[in-house]
Length: 168
Length: 371
Image (cartoon, rainbow over all chains, first blue to last red; front, side):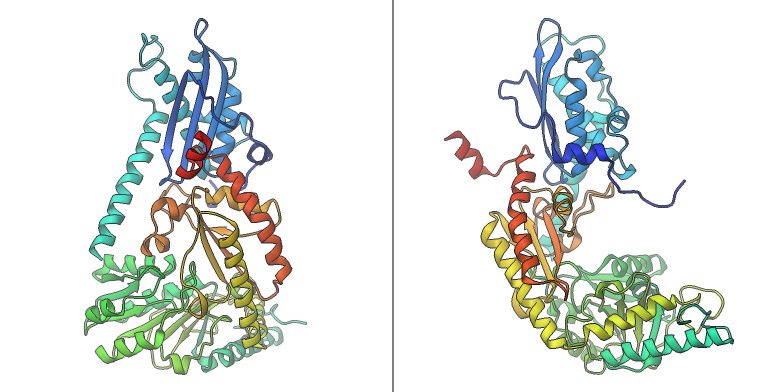
């Protein structure tokens, strides 16, 4: 294993950073979700338009407050889910996101994880007021947990810092 | 032509030439900071020099078990200091104000006969705050003559006048690449009579405190850049400060929701510009600017899984989201006003584009859109 930490972006990441596909909001989205926070310096919003009869994703858009990898990950994920039934979209892993970007530097894997976390939150949001399909796990998946942990961690850190500066 | 090729500890002609080059380089550096060449210990970086200063002085102390560092020190000071806690030392971080100036009352309250060392950078590496080292020294010496004073002077060299005799510190760290020299060369000034323990062990080189073969070509380059930075020193520094102010004022006037981190004017290093762009993710901004030939750095730890932003910006009271949008830009002596104008042309658009990708918009913009 290399002792060095690679941090070079591949062509695909830079291309999507420069010209992101599916950037923006869907105002009448059928499902949307946010993962991460401003304080983390890492945040992804996913908006989905869903065909109710077939449960296929007909349109997907994103917004991102994050690094170049974060933007590229959210962008490629929205490309990957378009036209897919929700069940198939749910199965996309952060590794699939990374592979579709031609690989992410290891220190940026969490960007792929956060994007998938946001997508799965959006899919769960879609089923909040309707019968849940069998394939939808009851417990949060690792990607969803990751988003939650990131938000909780930064919240705890921010509170600790505020406490320290109050004492100083 | 053989400079730097021979092993400086071996007694053949090429070795002698290398040895001589090291000595000449030390003389050059010593001349710039007013000390003796014998007081210069070469390392391979400022990080190594800081580690040697802190761990090396702790190695000699059986009685004094307290170390004071400012809360905005470089991590190569903070981490070795924290490591000493494992060996029974107490580390106290001295708070700073909103511009990064040390709380001297706090310092005065905490320096005592138990204190081994006080370590404060002359110039802060992120926000360019120039500390009042004379006031610090007077407080520390007045409390106890035996307390060591270390200053990380990596960002001060070539930017502020550094005279080791006047400064009256015991240890000072320097780095070659921070003054545009080659990477891989640093130095620690160790005042005559100050005892340190080596922290790296191996075959004796030309110096006792840092074994291993010296990076001779790197050190020659380091010494040369010290010489160049100190030619027309005052003119260089005032020119850099003018460019710095043009850049700061240009950004603050042309980019909304931008805030300067650190002090202004003479109390700020002449090369340092550090600005937080609210609602703008900094790493994305550095990549965007890099694509347009502007190379700047960001302050956060986004490259790691640690989500905590710059400890320096948090210490001066910035909120997490403010600290995440910070850019550090350095003016080099070779920059001109046309470089600054180019940055001022490109930067507002770059910030605007990165902000446009974000799901979080400033409240004002949201209301405008609704209207």
